[in-house]
View 1: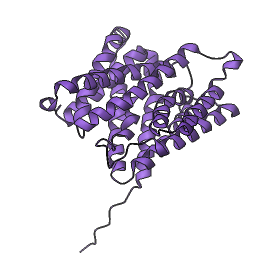
View 2: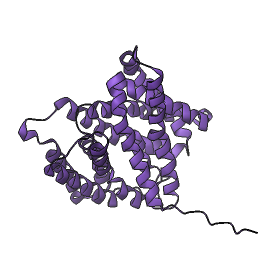
View 3: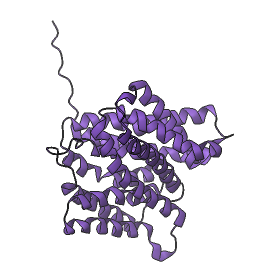
View 4: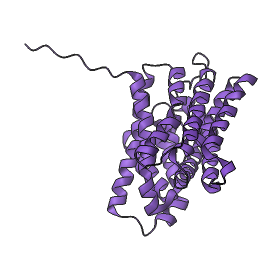
Length: 300
């Protein structure tokens, strides 16, 4: 009788990194679709495909919805749709790594505020310094629209954190996503359908389906697996690597070559994010939704 081989254990940190890699790869590969159907059109197609997947995986828990849940559910769905459009519009105009770094200032600030310490506010300041090195506004090469869209995405991501935790406290597993992602798709549709009209082809639909798997479907699954075997503090610290991952994929996939000052800027943002996350997480002993915060990766 042949002995059964033990299952290969994948380290949880590897699952977390794979989730972030999937998010940023999905963003990098979205650029070609953006050129075809626009940022809003890409957001609409990607979110619509993602919504279909989530609806197939989980039935929306509509019977559990109470009147006081509606503002948070609608707000989270609308925020997700707007953040997705804004981020895609940003990477259409500025390098991927720069856009991710600017957007990351949003959750970085929320984590610092949660620390309830004036000293913690130094981390968003350090992150902003990194963003300044990335954008180099003193050289006059700044793309105001691109930076503006990324800044809007940062504000939206900060809002997403707060709303996600409220929804996560009420709906477990895929239940909340099966409600909010379709709302996000409808939000993106208001701008995306007119923008994409006349430009949708079978190849574009296939690309959108693949992008939806890269973000948000695959990252969500990987994050859930990782969170079963690691603390939210450890996950939050790893999450600070996301701007660096976006920067590397911008180089490899989009051929966006960084200067030395840009590398320093990314390092400052990563260090600020890791430091802020150390004290910026919810207490799992007192908060019901402590496991939810790392799902923020799926917002883009």
